[in-house]
Length: 200
Image 1 (tube, one colour):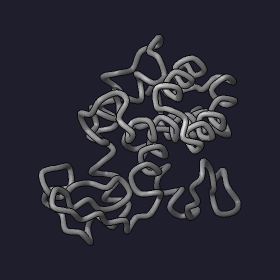
Image 2 (cartoon, one colour; image 1 turned 45 degrees about the horizontal axis):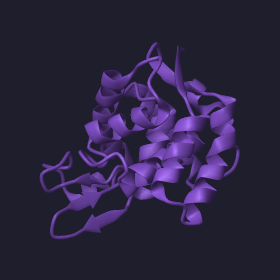
Image 3 (cartoon, one colour; image 1 turned 90 degrees about the horizontal axis):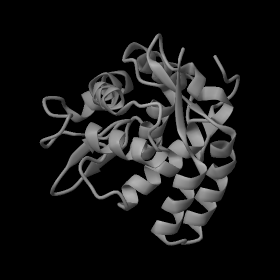
């Protein structure tokens, strides 16, 4: 295991046991670890018991699977709070989106936008939507961090973040937290991050 203590990265903290489970399920579902971490972080903050209930949704668990018309249909709230089941139900959509979008030349922001919208996290929204911007910021932190993106499963292409991405992530997060206009942050992300791939 990479961590000897409680894993902590990109503003999130989670247990070593949950970390091992996420790694295992990401590998089993052929989802690059940086993407698994990104969507778990964005959706639930690594809280397996996260539950968002509104007039439009009943979203539960690590990937906030919606029991009302979404990927979470057919399961109880308690079932979706089982992190392994939640990942097994939710990760295949992320894998399919990743496989559809994968390209050696795709721009970083376009890549994460397409994976997010095609996987249902959050689904079809505008490129400048605040939810997409947040996902992009989280991913910009996770994919180069500590070589995590070199740990993509099996022969599946896994993301490799360049040094510019690693340097850019803290500035992007700072710009957003200071209230920088969305288009400015998007422009920074587009100019300073680039997604390239390798076969592990």
